[in-house]
Image (cartoon, rainbow, N blue to C red; front, side, top):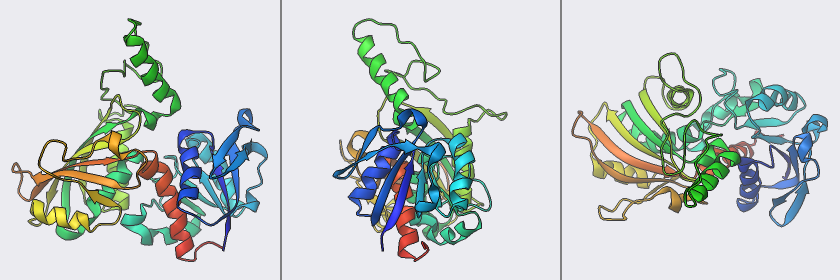
Length: 338
């Protein structure tokens, strides 16, 4: 069986990754449609050895597709997601708009695949935040083994998480500094080149940012509402690849060796953990890869039943496009697509 698939936001970083991954993973696509704003009509994007011309979202007929992968921002998803779903397309949405809707499953296939059955209520499935996706892939097998009580996570998030203009700003500022140009922040609140910024998304009343709140709320919805989680999310001068330093407190004892073996057997996880210089994965090395990499697994002696670890993933892939395609694969494999 083959399916007609639309990618909404096909000219963006994630939209282009969605098309690439659909091809790489040999998803059974009959006809693919690159859907974008009116300004992008006629622009060409690649889909394997094919070239697609972008069509206008405003006039696109969603009744002719089985799956609509959305990655065009919350406002577009809010308006067009329900319309596409009503036309019969299963919507897999990468924005934050539907994630906390109780009638919309929030899915990471390696973690909570069974929850996908709830999509029929609205014909919409939500993709989690990029930093949440890799986090829960690493946490799930450990939670099953020893029950997680509390997580403290600090993120090191690349500029691609803020879009192409943010990546361009990092490039231009870095280049400019070498010729004594004064960096001018536009996409970020402060200089991003040779700097780190402890601020992603808007500030909330309690002092946390919305990105930090997303990690807490989404982890509870995907994995376990009883888990306590606190996050500090930081933007770093990296183009692609998010990293996380994670401290975990468990209900039951678990050693670092046990955790290492559990994670080696876990779906979607690749353990690279040699206690020597270079025996770990960094963002540069994860680009273009499907896995969530875990390194530096060690006992946290400051709490009872504690572990610390380092987690890295390509945020445009597992954090967004790959997870969306995996959801489509999950629907296909379970016979949930008409």
